Image (cartoon, rainbow, N blue to C red):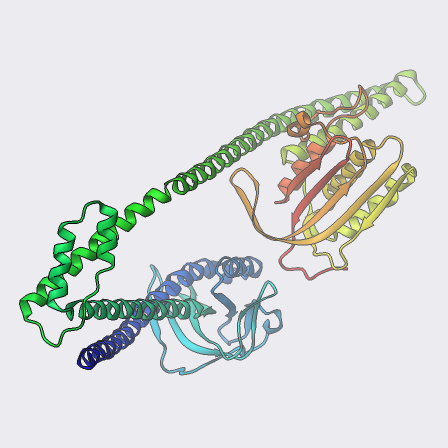
Length: 565
């Protein structure tokens, strides 16, 4: 018995040491080569990604178009979670554009420190067509001197090692400056961590399986020969698969001091046959017992797939509805623009004839008064035409930087004089971002929203006007229209009767109105839609019958302006 135990212990110990050392050596070697391979791939990815950004900056930097440069770099930073910081410097090293506004205009950049400035981990020289000066690209390993935050979330910690990339920005053969972009090495660390953990877990799992198999084989092969023969004889007389399985499972062999090699081989072969029979029998029994559970699980999966398919069909119907509505509004917009121009020409002619009548009739004449009424009617028609042009997105714009809070306050002063029966609650963002647009068009948008909300409450009620800053990430706002970035929102909520479901798709159609004859032109909301869309924004509606409506507009925030009170 002691010799058997000694043999088993020695064999298992030897196998354990050999396999463990082999696993550690293989893991170390694979980790070393995989690190170099993945790091090389990561550096090449950084090169091609930053090269695409660099090519867009040459002509922008030559034209001093800092706003679009900042937008380009901010979009790249928002789209890539590994991009931590960026700076754009001129030929003297002065920072022109940076994700940290405190560095603009300064020389130097101490956010990171390069380990070896004379030994980049990657470098390449790119010569483009007509370039006299080649663009040089280098990547260094640098250490962060402070924490890096992205959208309020910690993206990289102080003293963390990052990839520090430098590009020479050229345009028409002349160097314009240098672009510096930092990338996190978190992806490399995660990859190596997963690799090492996976290899060690797999290796030690193989080790345990190997040890278990060796222990079992040794144990089975040290059975006495008599017990083996008797067992075979008993098995020969057994009838019934279940009984045979139980007998095979209960087979035990007493230890033997010595056995000939042929008997050992027979026992090994029999042991494998026994194990295979037991495994297959257990699997068969398990399938028989769990057949109902398997059917239930499969039914649940099919139900889940059906629900997913139903959601996809509904989403497709929604997209088709958006597409039809978008095409309809676009077609109506073209028609409205053409009609508006034609009416403008007619109104100009009518105004000219009215002026001619006044000149020929003289002051106080009856025809002169009628001509003046004609001019008043033409002015009203021109106002409707201007709203049509706003919907058709061909209106006249004089753009500048605007504070939406100030626009609302100005229009509310005029509005509250005419509707004192309505209680107006305002909720202004304390530091609202500025927008870039036409002041007169924005006044028209705000006033139309206020008038629309007030007309939904002919008696009295409460109107809530709110503004806020909002950052959108890949927000779907229309067919093939996905927006991201900083936006300023204006929302007007009323306590009116709401909009019927069948009218929701027609709210922005020109001349569509649910008010009685002479109750409105139906151009207010259509002009809101056209003006906001022409300013790069979008409009949303939330409404339910009997519960009021919420109209919201979203306008892009100006990238060059600071926050305004």
